[in-house]
Image 1 (spheres, helix red, strand yellow):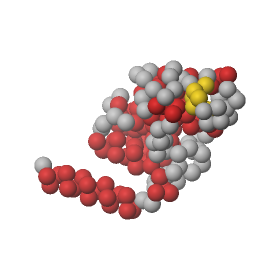
Image 2 (cartoon, helix red, strand yellow):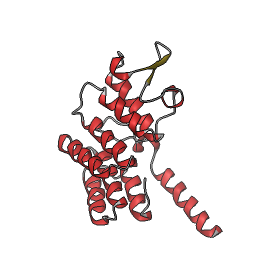
Image 3 (cartoon, helix red, strand yellow):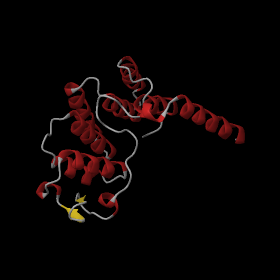
Image 4 (cartoon, rainbow, N blue to C red):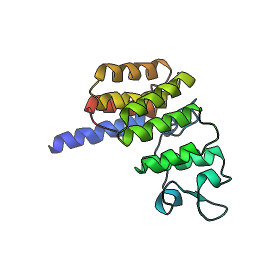
Length: 184
C-alpha cells in the first residue's frame, strides 16, 4: 500500500516536472483550466449574485454593469465550487450567449448538476463554434467516462492530441480520468 502511494506521488511529480505550468493554460480558447481562486463571489454572494469590486458588494449580474469577462470568471468560480445553478444564472447574464466558452461552461455546470444530456448538448454546441476548443473536448470526454463510454472518451483524447493539446491540462486531465475511470 505504501509502495503504491509512493509510485503515485512519483508519477505526479514526474508529470509536474515534465509539463511546465504554462503548458497547463490552454491556448486558443482564452480559458484558464486551473480552478479559479475563491473570491467574494463564491464566499459571500448568494443565489447567482456576483461580487462587484467597485461597489464592494454582491450584485445581480443581469442588472449590473459588469463585463462579460468578469461574469465569465465569476461563473467559472461558482461552477468549480459546486454552485452550478448560480454559475448558470451568471452565464445567462452574459451578452454573448453563443461564445464557445459560455456554451462550454453551460455544459460543465449542467453536467455536474446531473443534467448530463443537456451538458453534452452544450459541449457539442461549443465544439460546433470552435472545433479546436480542447477544454470542451476534455469535459465532454470526462462525461463519456462517467457514462462508461470509453470509446468516445478516447476519441476526444485523440482529438485533443491531434489539435496540438498534448501538453495541456485538458489532455492530461482527460487521460487521467480515462485511466482511473473516475469522475471529474
